[in-house]
Length: 376
Image (cartoon, rainbow, N blue to C red; front, side, top):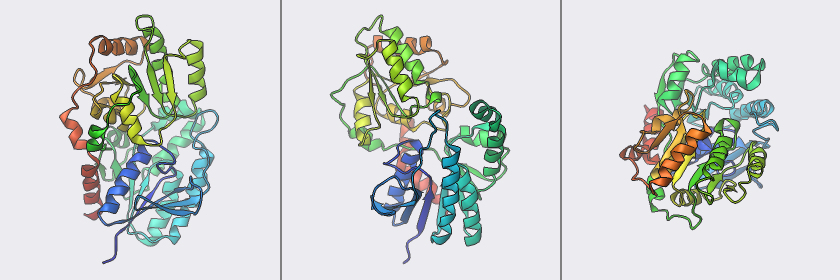
């Protein structure tokens, strides 16, 4: 019996590039491979060697050379997006039964639409977040109106959209006026794997993990650590990740004389090492103002940490938080963040019992929900 060939399209591929979308694609691909699918990830070639390699029973296709995802100014590279989009036309030479493409970086949706129409295949698209006109203008100035038009048109390319949260679904409907079918299937976690991990010997008081981008507001976390240092001179904050803001953040640490209080880790080779660091900390701080979901916050909750995140309209992570039970949703202010961190530290709360709702986010269940959409 011929295996079903599943094609997943996204410019960045895990583990060579690490982020929430990359993690989702990788975890789902592993599970579909275990189900007997022939799974193929198409993206930029981030590895050395052949254009096609096999990893964890998944075929990785490098359809073009890698380009930086972000410019020196820390914004998403339009040239990279266009370059990858053009190269996605190469998929016309590929054979597949099911194709699921991530909504970013937009231009790839147009190329893949042509491919799927030519091959008479259905085009699924996984949508992580919606920026909308206002945010695009803030992000790019006058060019933001053009970017918004591209986003608006992109949402009309797929035959069916899978949104990672109700938050994203609502923004697709309200901001982009999408009228086609949208099914919500959230991101997930390796619950059993997380629960089995032992805490790291490297202990900390507060931890952050994610790409170091401006909207993550890690600078405010550092500022809150500076405030807390008055009462906790030995307070230790761990920041796991890398990105365009890294140099600015390290400079801020030097300016505030926090070299002994704030420790930076690049993205860890083994994701289990992140869980270990989480389990050896006391609070997970996630002051981001733009998240389509927030996998890392879910991982922190499963690791037994309360999560502090922001009450911002574009932050879907806040929907994962039950105030007082598994964290706090707060205003974007270093004094308030410091106050909430202090509350957790002063009560000697080392861990919390993960909420029962976390069980609903296991990757096995997520893969089953996705498969039902593909095969209906």
